[in-house]
Amino acid sequence: MSESLNRETAATTGPTAPVTLEPFSQHLGALAIQYCDRPVGLGELLTATRGRGFHLLLILITLPFLTPLPMPGVSLPFGLAVAVVGARMALGQQPWLPARLLAWQIPAGLLPRLVGASGRILRILEQILRPRLAFLASDLVFGRVSGLLIAISGLLLLLPLPIPFSNGLPAGTVVLLSAAALERDGLCFLGGCILFLVTVLFFALLAWGGVEAFDQVLRHLTGDKR
Image 1 (cartoon, rainbow, N blue to C red):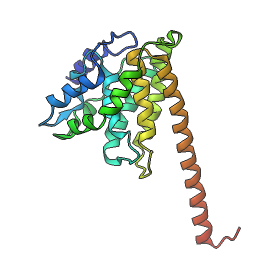
Image 2: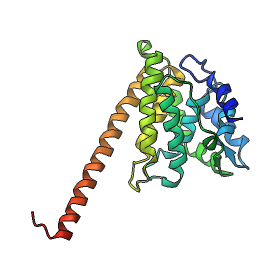
Image 3: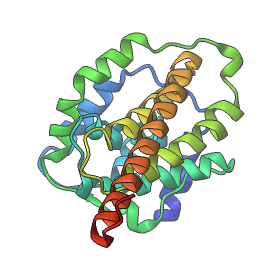
Image 4: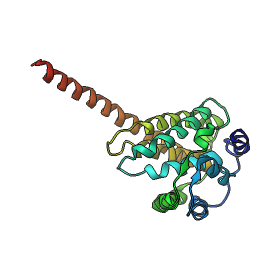
């Protein structure tokens, strides 16, 4: 069943997939109403987004993380899903998710709250997105390059770090790159690339700070006064 679902949705998720005129907020609002009182699996959500497919799913599952506060428990399955889809895009393959991830359930009532909290961000995206910088609108850019950056962002989203912005920065990168692919917006793609660089710098600084802190603790424990 999961293979059938992946095949059905793959046909509408490539770089040349037609873009529906329905705004993001209306589409996701309808999904929130549809699943307001029961759990919903990622696979079921993917079926419901047919016509926009994996890019819309990526936006939906990363929007909740666009806050300064991290969500380590929830970021694990969502980050893994983002990384898998992005990696397949980067390799030039059709997007796909393992059956276990497709079966992962969002608790009842959570989806409407997530969509409601993200409504303002969605409306801002709807106002600024439009097809532009056509020279960037290629399979290489919106497929492989975006896929690579999305995959890396998904891996960063997986990290269980109780540090502000450790979820928000990679999630923001995924939202911008996925929205750019949906609307063929080269300028939004460039914005996603810039945010990706900021994200990588942020995590590099965290890693450097962690190494320095560990070194200081080790010196203190060993009595090294250097």
